[in-house]
Image (cartoon, rainbow, N blue to C red; front, top):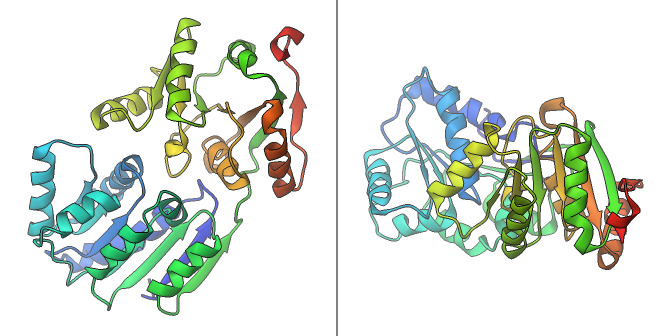
Amino acid sequence: MSGSDLIACAQTGTGKTAAYLLPILSALSTASPNHADTLIVAPTRELALQIERAVEGFAYFTPVSSIAIFGGNDGSSFEREKKALTQGANIIIATPGRLLAHLNMGYVKFDKLKHFVLDEADRMLDMGFSEDIAKIIRFLPKNRQTLMFSATMPPKIRQLANRNLVNPAHINIAVSKPAEGIRQEAYFVNDHAKNRLIVQLLKQQNFQSVLIFASTKENVKTLERELHKLRISVQAIHSDLQQDIRRQVLLDFTNRKTQVLVATDILSRGIDIDGIDMVINYNVPRNAEDYIHRIGRTARAKSEGIAITFVNERDRQSFSKIEEFLGKEITRRQATTQQSLQ
């Protein structure tokens, strides 16, 4: 609210979206500009849509206008985005590639922009958007407030901040630590027994909402088919699906029409779905920070949840590094039958 640049780092689920939206909306609700005041850049379509929903909710009784801009839509969507950009929607929420497509056509004017927000900045760099972000910044006025929000703060994020922020304030809250309400467990199990173990876990307790992370979209597709054969209510989400299908899959999971959602790391950050009972790491995440983001989908907003990781022989070393990062040993569990572990 003071207008200074800001680097804010806090674990997933702590309310970073509200932290930047509420002060911006407070200023916009009294100023009532007829131009683009705020640009929010997010790494995925799902996160852009989630931010737009938050804007719509918070700004319901204000004159503030907004639009989410992202790829994967038809031509009519592009024209609708162009109209909003040229006629002055107050808040623009965009993924990097789609925004650049509009910027390169020359009709977008950000000369009066006051706020530039990079949400999930570390994720954007992990996804290879560093050059796109640099190009976007060239279209922005130098006299602006830049806000960088991230769940982690690796060196490359600090380098990005040093290049684009001016004397930023720093806020760091509980960096890279799982929420207290998450019960973490691990099963040491061979790959061929993982699906039977999932069935066992679902039968043990009446879980209504289970999110399973697999390492690749090919694994996600295969796991969805195999769980469906086992009569589990399951859907999958991955980058090969069209946007309207992805949206419906998420809606079905959110509304409890689907019990199990299988996903890649596209859902490991920024997606806020209430009441996820259990997260299963079908594969050990590649590093500790990815592990924290994955399990952070449960036990949000001080609720409770279970996070289970399947560890095969090949992944034991990676799993040990995660425990070393956490500074504690994750509880070991055994399946109800020894056959499942063989």
